[in-house]
Amino acid sequence: MTSPLTEKKTVALTSVAAAFFLTGIKLVVGLQTNSLGVLSEAAHSALDLVAALMTVAAVMVADKPPDKEHPYGHGKVENVSAFGQTILLVLTCAWIIFEAVNRLLVHETHIETSAWSFVVMAIAIVVDIGRSRALSRIAKRYNSQALEADALHFSSDIWTSLVVILGLVSVSMGYPTIDAVAAIMVAFLVLFVSYRLGRRTVDALMDRVPQGMYERILKEIEHVDGVDEVRSIRLRSSGAKVFVDTSVAIKRTLPFERAHAIMDSIERTIHGLHSNVDVVVHAEPLESPDETISDKIRMIVIEKGLRAPHNLEVHSVQGKHYIDFDIEYQKGKSFIEAHEMTDEIEKAIRENLDSVQKVTIHMEEYEPEERSFTDVTAEERLLLERIRKSMLADTRIRETSGIALLKVGDSYNLTLTCHIDKSITLDDVHSIIAKVEGDLYLQFKQLRRVTIHAEPY
Image (cartoon, rainbow, N blue to C red; front, side):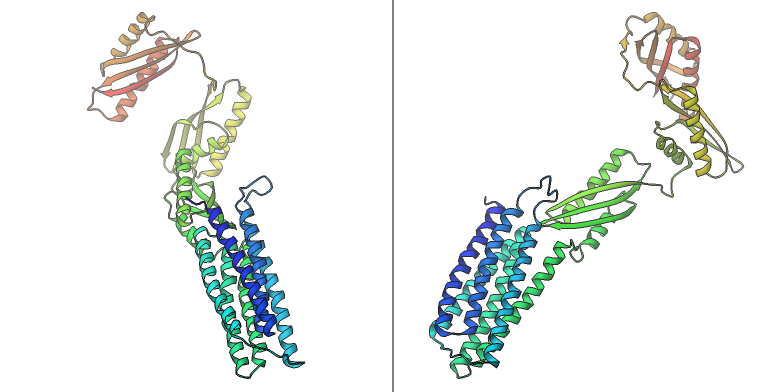
């Protein structure tokens, strides 16, 4: 399968060969007939040759991958090439208009018409049609602005060649001044094309957004599930590639995995709009109106660099809020440091929430590093039997299973499953588990942690 670079380079080199051929035959016939119209076309074809060579160079450079000095790639060289073509077109048109006005106002020049003049211009039209179509097809396929500029450039040759033929017909009918007029018409047609080409080139170099693209991208991002607000979109093109940087607001209460999935969805959506696009999505946390008091408290604690609070409860009494929860500090933090941080959290809660009557914060300690545990379930059968009997003393617990005992230092971590009557409520289950855990901590001082899973009996 032919690579994009090979296809673009092939059509550009074919254009070079065609421009070289047409420049030669137009120049020979123009000198023989002394026709300014044909000579202007020869100059135009010579310019086509230079433009085609510039396009070949631009296509080769533009396909280089990004590097340290060009993080957005080398695609802008296509726009530079098109801008250079525009300048050459304008200079040539200025010369053609000057010579034409000079012939009309200062002196007449004898012009000879021949069948070769018409043959050459007809050949030029056929070649230009095939050349512009091939360039346009490849330019659209790979979104190449350099080839698109060439296609626009060469399609103008078709119209200028028709104008020259009109001038030659007029000369053969005895109206030699029409040749100079035809040359001026050629020049103005080329200037019009140059203006269009130059405007698009400058727009690309100035990173002007393609018309309608900003609105399309904004609309699609706004429809992505989970995006609450689109705060900014920045677009720029480099050759065939479009770079999109967007900043969106996502609810701060969402887990990181969910936020990341939303950003991935945005990228896929934009890729669906444009095949050759590089997307960077920045997500900012949003305090949404539907946040609960508990949500706001969790965010305040997390913003202080701590773990999310647990055992969080908010009680409303006669319009006043009583708040209590547990927070964990890393092992080794001093009591003074932890207390100061706790005071800051309480102050932030009162500043951000209305009608706060009382805030009670229980401070705990945790060890971030992994500790080496030993499974002593088989060795500590007597201890486990005592624990089991203690639990079954509560008649609401029908059975225990899945007991495991892990030892670290002189302490133990206990995990097990309690089977409780399935007819009771979840709140009752929670109360039973809480009481059992409290009793175990009181009876067995060596337990550092108890985790109980409830199963319906």
